[in-house]
Image (cartoon, rainbow, N blue to C red; front, side, top):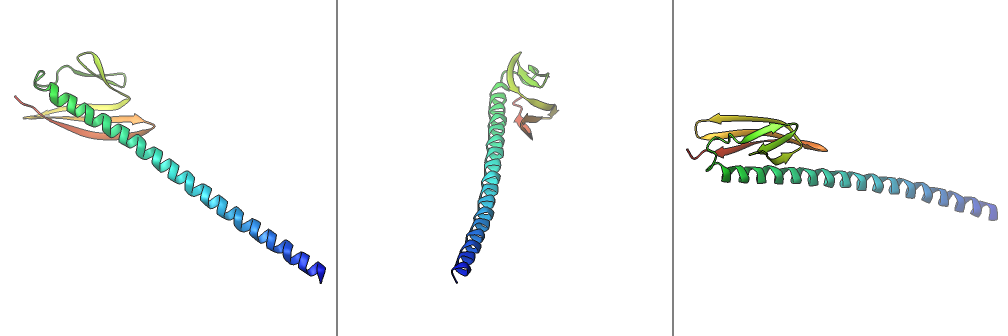
Length: 123
């Protein structure tokens, strides 16, 4: 009878170890996924802040430079009046349309995010 109790106890311990291992792996996987999502959200928000600050800066400068002719793109960097405005620019396209200037900018900082920036031209 004593051997029977010992074998049951060993089976219980093995069962608990298996369940604990599965739970630990599941929790680790969930934690990793949450961490990756938070990191991606953080990077997206940083890029959105860069887009918004660029839009606000150019909106302010449109009164001086009516068609943003001082805006240039070279070597993955966007310049205004030969000063760095935005780095890590993957692609840049400027379109003039009547009273609106449309800038299509793609930024890359581990993730890539593209946005159209529309600036009302006050001509």
